[in-house]
Image 1 (cartoon, rainbow, N blue to C red):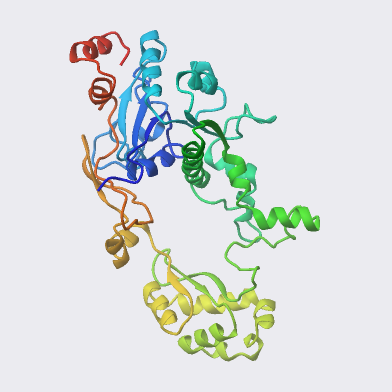
Image 2: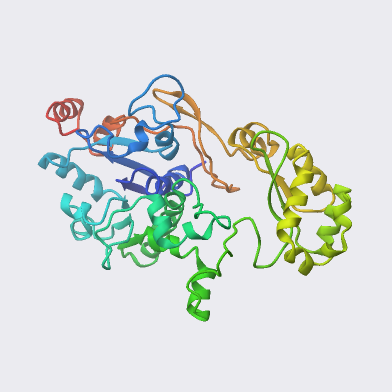
Length: 411
């Protein structure tokens, strides 16, 4: 069945996570995404090309697991934009594309000679979507960023941590991934506008502002109540303050670095937890009501941890779930993939075929469509893997012309 976006062609300069993750979604839904790379750089701009995990002992720009994961179902071409012929071919490709997408630092596309005005001169209704750290407006426009930097500047890093310890952050390049989600939506909204009006446009995305938009409650507290930061010691990412709950956290279980998450929403959940635990402390009158549990939260957490520490995390979660208490084992990736029965039922990690690596599992999409579902079968492209298909099949060059361009360093 044709994908929902099979009528679209995207000229794709994106890389790494924040950009490549966006066009990945669209490719899975049927869009023809043509990823353009520099043959001279040999994949060095997109560091994911050579990053682990690897499937075996082979290393190099064709074997990076993260690159394959973020570029499934895309076509890959090489094009040297330092040459006039390379620029001519790009102009020809833009002329038959619906979207040009990139996540370079601000100003890179202009320096290459393909800023928005130049693109619009090639195709008047082109949708151009750029995604950089601070967008193309404001005093920070020339600053360069990386996922963890975006998280820090946007305020997200401060929002995760334990009392008395430095901010924990939100994990590896969280905003690179989230920036990709925002970018995918931005592309679709601009295309929706073009479908209605025939008008293309430049969509300028600031990844840092995207991160700030995830800090709504803290920003609202500062704007309305004048509190620029939480009260001293209030940052505790395992505890629920809004609404208040206790116990609410991640507790150690039996085994090495094994954990179980528990959330008691109200007194009924607390009573059910106490019955499942069968411990004397669960009958302590101090903990019968929420106010008492909040007042002694440190002591309460220690008691709950004493109970969970002697139990397998899956067994503890199952016992609490049976009692009606929200609980779940904190799963490692391999447990989520190989143990959780919902994974196979959902098809969340499909297997794709990569030209060099063979069959490899990748991330699927957490959504299914009854009529136009996504598909992931082809792995990420090797450097220039689809030069013949694109420059020959789409732009009409013959085999001798393509071979000559390759010899001249254009491809």
